Every structure is written in structure tokens, then in C-alpha cells.
Amino acid sequence: GSYIAQNMTYAHMHVNARVRCEDGDVVPLYKSYFAFNAEDLPSDSELSKDIKLMMSQLVELKSAPLAEPYTGPALLHARVAGVFFHEIFGHRIEGHRLKSETDGQTFKEKIDKKILPNAINIFSDPSMTKYGSQDLIGYYKFDDEGVKAQKVNVVENGVLKSFLMSRSPLENFSSSNGHGRSQAGLNPVARQSNLIIESSEPFNEKKLRKMLIEECIEQGKEFGYYFVDVTGGFTRTDRYNTNSFNIMPTMVYKIYVDKRPDELVRGVDLIGTPLTMFAEIYATGSKKSTFTGICGAESGGVPVSATAPALFVKR
Image (cartoon, rainbow, N blue to C red; front, side, top):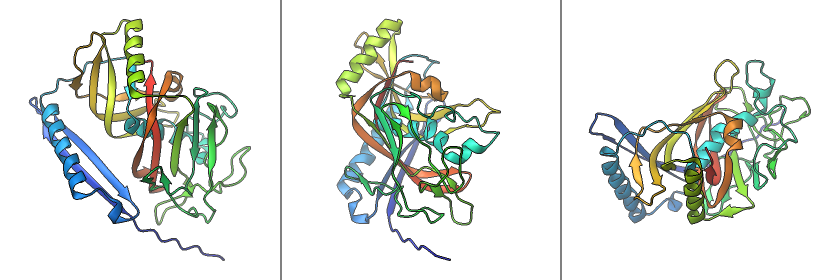
């Protein structure tokens, strides 16, 4: 018979732009800003600077060549890595999926097993309002089933330890950990909140770039890809389709091993399967970035964030 009322005000601002390329292809760019208080959004001068950068990038994209199919080493900027982990990992640790016979259940048998490099730790914490100076949109005090928000240590030193749980139990996970969420009017299920990826062995950007070039040489590749920005992504978790993900980058550069200038290309999708991609993560960056958005799934759209460092993957 108890009721919980939660009120939260916030400001979420979006800037969208697109350009029609010389071959008729339309390329979008997107940037968003989030803060609990409107006065913490970027100043007019900062916003103007970001928009001018976006305009110059659109001019570059207009004449950028289409990328050819590629399998090989790549760098994922922290902004891209946040979306990457949200799609490739976050949806697959939502507990309700592991009860469905139609779901691929990627990680169901992986508890207490190594799935990532030893240096990586992942937790989900809806009680966090900030990571560094960035406000986190996935914050709440109680979930939509009335359970207090809790920090869940999902991966410890590369080993999977837990799932995100609603009140619907799972074998060996009998109670909620405060992640039952839904859009108004829909039934709550286990959903993401604030997903945080941390590394105990970070490398600076210069070192990651050197690793990329060295690995390209080792594999006989002329270049590697550097994924700098992204519009979003989607994933399939059911067992009747390829258990895959698709990240949609907007700014992608070829980094040549012979020291030619980096080349902007377009028409690239980052596609793969979770366990294969996880096995190829070799190093992480020292700087982190936060992806903020509204995630749509079975229980509707819920606000989420994902904070991650840059990633170097071998292929």
C-alpha cells in the first residue's frame, strides 16, 4: 500500500545537422548535452564553438570517400566506446532476457568466468548523479517497482559477477537490485541505468595510436580505423537472428602505417558479435566520455548513460 513519488528536473539539448555528399548520400552529425540544472549546460560561446566544429566536419564529410570493407585493428574513441558497451554488453546483462527461451542468453553461463581483460571493471549505479563533472541521466533513488537504487558490480577484474535485476527472479539471483524500469504505462523489466566502465591499466591516446599502427604492421594492414564519433546503435539478443550488434559511426578516420595524414571516410558500420569482440579488446584509454540517451526496449524508453574509456581492439 505504499507509494513513492520522485520528481526530477533536467535539461537535455540536442544539435543535429546533416550534409548531402557529392554522390547523393546524406550524412548526419549529432551532439547532445545533459545537465540537471539548465545553467550547467554549455555557455553560448561553447555551444557556438561546437556548432562551428560540426559545420567544418560536415564540409569534410561532403567530399570524403566511401570506406571499403575492412577487418582489422581499430581504435574506438571514448564516446564510441560508451555506445559500444551499452549495446554489446548492457542489454545482455538485463536479467529478464535470461529467462526467455527466445533470447540468445549470451552471458547466462558466464558467471564467475572471464569475459574481458583483467584490467576492466564494470558496474551499474543508478544512485550516482555525476561521473567527474558530467551529470548522469540514469540517476534515480527508487526504481519503477519501488526498490531502492543499488550499485551492482557486474564485472570485476574481467570476471562476470552479476546481472541487472528487477523483482522477477532468476536462478541464483532471487531478488531485485533496483533495476526494474519502464516508461510510464508499461510493465517494468530489468534495464540499464548508469553503466560505468573503468580500467586499472589505462594508456594515453599517443600510446594507443602506436599500438594500432604496430598491430596493423604485424597483420600486414595498410591502415587501421579510428572511430571518433557515433550517432547510436542497436543490437539483437534473440537466438533466431545473428546475436550481433551494429554501431553507426559518423566520424571515422584511416590511420596509415606509413605516416600519411589521417583520412576521413564515410559509410562505415561497426558490426560484430559480443564474445568475439570482447576477445579482441587489448587496451583501454586514460580519458573517459559519457554517452547520454533514451534507451528503447521491451518496457519503453528509459534514460540511461554509459561512461567508458577509449578501446584498442586487434580486429
